[in-house]
Length: 295
Image (cartoon, rainbow, N blue to C red):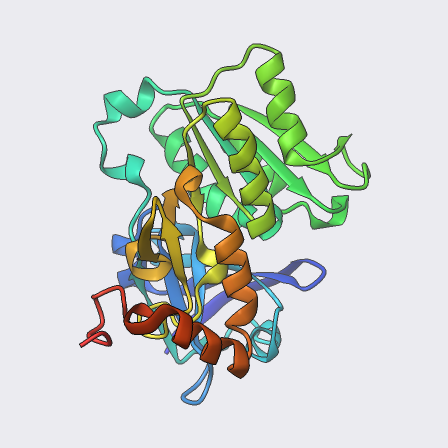
């Protein structure tokens, strides 16, 4: 059992928990995720790691209520436990394994949308711990949905906040902030964008025009988290990938966004999955080659 040490509501339908998971905390890196399961019959829920404390042996997760399982999870309090808390899973952010001098010589821009602020935070924190100042854009629909503001301010070089309705700091989309920074003379070597699929799509559309290489995290399309269900299949640079085993981070300019979003909608229904099975043939299930489902 994995005990919940802290549980709090950050915003409407958005919750944060600190979970005692020493082994996961010992080995995890920015960009990776865990799979949580409330009880023996509960659904497997993949969640990107928001923060970790190796000394305390804790993992911080942030989740939004999107269905019955996350609704049930929202009722858990400090002192309750998860039946399973598996990780770290997925491939860590690329910069973690790169020579630190190369990383320090780049100018990074991080763009977070909504709950995407949670997986962006550990990456920005990693940069701060290694003496690297980065610019961060955080966007949300309203002021009440801005997450981890103080935490992000403490680790970012410059933090720009924008809201769709103009209820906090500035009004507009994150793409407008990117354009404004570019027009002001800011030049970036890499952009990391994490948030809703539609946000990442339009960020990539803009950064491609501005010639800024962009990394995205496709954690929103993960379901099983192990490569077995085929739900997170995506085409990147004309190759079939699975977010949970090949990612979740990918070259955003290479992602077929329209296909990914259409497939995400279809996968939610039995009829849609049946259609995808016919369309995708042998690569529909287990096509990642990691789980044996393609044998």
